[in-house]
Image (cartoon, rainbow, N blue to C red; front, side, top):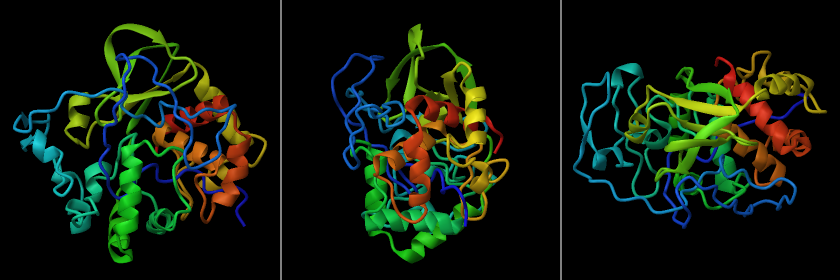
Length: 339
């Protein structure tokens, strides 16, 4: 029997779901208030990390649907309207991946959005959903089943991407989930996150797609958070799949995180289940090089009780022992590794 739980899984979305912008009122760059968990216990000593559960805090101006978009290295042209069509995935680089199954490319109207709309045709995903490339098909199928049965939720109900995924799970059938899972399982996850240790970072905002972005102007202290932002905001906004993200992490967190995962935070070393290089072990998911925002959400959901299902009972004791600082250090280290 494995000694440590299946650690981190599919973050707010697996097959699809638009990251729906939410509105509030706060100055651009100001730290938004962290909403309390909705589906797990409220942790007075460990508040919801807003930077991992990012939700837009003010309205953004509408995009011109007819504006034409291009990306470096692609011969294709799309419009703002077409890159936001959840039933027709904008595939900028079709030569870089196998032909997408219908459920991945077009979904099934009206409730099952195309898987590749959020997770991208190559499965690399984005911070507000999840990188599904290289996960085992059985693991993907189980996570969708858990969502469908209500054993896997989120610690907050404010993230549009998570809410959309839960709807997809409810309306998808076993056959199409298996088709999508087999497709993504065959893809190789590539290096997607560049980890940078720093004390300072540009002022941040949360864009219409619920992604952290760096705003022009003076810098501010990073503090106890991780800011994961696009290397190329235009490419990511157009749903490009070749350029990933920068993760700004606290100085010294990578070294501290290495010690924590090797020691097991008072439990069992992470490698006991996830493999000696954290690249997965059978149906136990890989951790190396994955999004720190995604991994943070899963650890927090285990801790609050929002995430359950097979394997969760093994992971929950590990997550419950982690402090917010330890969680940051752990995901900073794991994200820095080569997948």
